Length: 122
Image 1: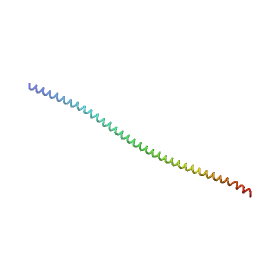
Image 2 (image 1 turned 30 degrees about the vertical axis):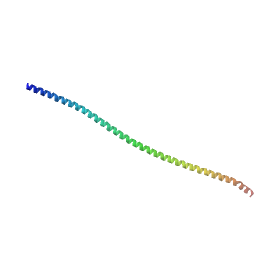
Image 3 (image 1 turned 90 degrees about the horizontal axis):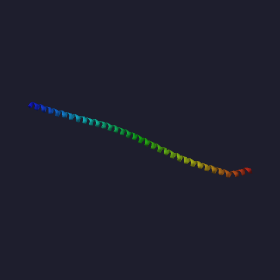
Image 4 (image 1 turned 90 degrees about the vertical axis):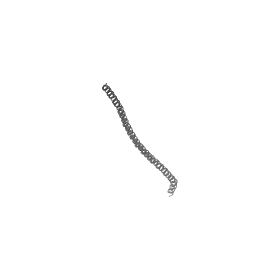
């Protein structure tokens, strides 16, 4: 009877240990799955951060290109304004030259009859 009782206790202990091992293995499987999920999440986060850094770098390059384009545009606008001033100066010089030419023609026209009259007298 004592031996049967010991055997029964031993069986109960073994079943209890087997149940504990099964529960531990089950918990280990859950933790392993959670760890795998966390690793995938970390990888995804790293990829997202890398893409974000690349996009930020591209944005900096685009901003630099836009600043260079603005600078170039400002230079072209300055050159255009200088060309317009030069054209206005040239138009004023041409108008002044036309006025001087007209004055010279008027003076010549006023002197011509006197020259013709002098030539006729000689």
